[in-house]
Amino acid sequence: IRITQSKICKKRMECLVAATHGAGSYSVVNFIRNDARAAIAVICLTSALLPVTLVLAKKQFTKLREVPAGGAGGEQARRWYLTICSFPSAAALSCWLSVALPNLGLAFQAVYEVFEAICLTRFAFVVLVLANGVEVLEDYLERTSAASAGGSAG
Image 1 (tube, rainbow, N blue to C red):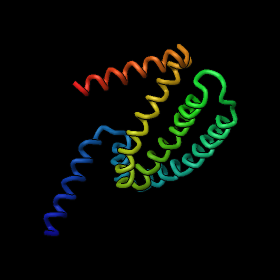
Image 2 (cartoon, one colour; image 1 turned 135 degrees about the vertical axis):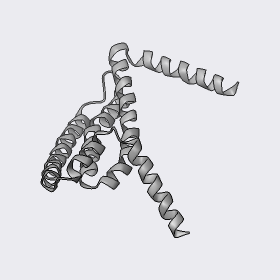
Image 3 (cartoon, rainbow, N blue to C red; image 1 turned 120 degrees about the vertical axis):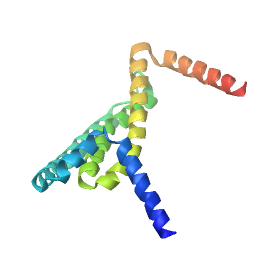
Image 4 (cartoon, rainbow, N blue to C red; image 1 turned 180 degrees about the vertical axis):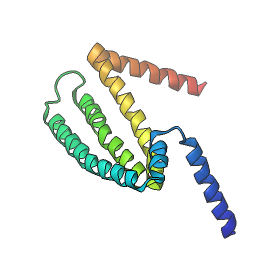
């Protein structure tokens, strides 16, 4: 049974590697796999840039929290901004994991992709609020949720 489980795990990893073949992290891992000096240089560089990115993102996050909630979008827009400003931290962590701990980086890549989609959605909402105002966005969201509820009921 253990041999079969081992083969299944190996097959799954091969599938994941094949799926991410075009991804940047996969290319970097293959590039540094054969050259120890390049691997050390890339890991040192990413290890230095990760904390810098995290500190800058923390400063931005803190400044955004201090901004009054008034204005276009109010408190909801502020939450959207905070989600968006945390995206560089997730990207930096994903890159560092992909280089320093490739197997863990591959697992984190799925979480990162979902978070990226959330940030893009929030960014689109912020742009809509800034362009058209909160009322237009709320009306649109109500119409689309009513349409999707009506479509799923039928």
